[in-house]
Image 1 (cartoon, helix red, strand yellow):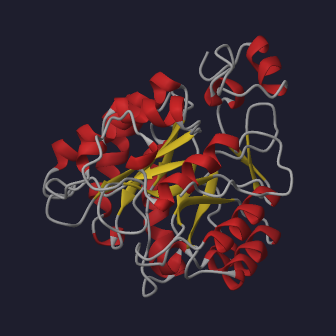
Image 2: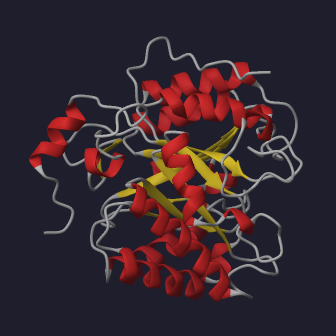
Length: 342
């Protein structure tokens, strides 16, 4: 039957086995199974909260230079070598070379990442990476129904139907109606996989979603994005208020640098955010799997997309994220993250 875990796998998961150094440990999907929302938490099949940690690919835009990372082998590297339990395919929509102008190539990139995630037993966020998705709801419906028909029976799959609505896109009047349309289309095919909805102001105004949540959609969480160099306690307070109001949050994108994706890593702020994420049992994906010359990139320019990756291939952000993922599924102590190597 769909998404049923063997009891032995559940027992192994409860034993807290890690994939690093334990070849017989369960994969994240074996350990947690199908994800669902209960109250303000995302839980696995045992009913226990699940906190996934992973990476987000860069825009999949044809000709953008970072589509080279969209390969199943790249997913394997993150799962096996970095202990990632989650990957995010940021499927470009609006720019030239995005889904609207090159649907076949961008769909193929999504498929490569999804197939890699299924092979490795990790979860995959399929992200409609747009700032104006409400302008083309029919394209989102077509894309997500294609994904649902192909993968809707897989517990690995998580739909992220709107990356970052602008601050001018009103939650109740613009984003919510768009979300209802796309969710209804997905639910015609896939009745139960988790769906994440972007929130107003680049997925920061989670309080507005909490004040007027989607009703009757079933198994829905809301996206929270932050960049540690720019976003600090005020955004955490907003996120905590949304959680206290009863909605579930998913940090589908975060960076250790400034909101524009550049600048130095603000390690102190990252640590504060990781403490918040651990305390609230949230899941998160770091931006970005890229060798573009900017602060958020995990890799230095010219790094081989499918690895293997040496320490000298990694940026400051890459070293921090690698170390963070390596220990994420261990019992949290003081919430500290290993300092990136020089």
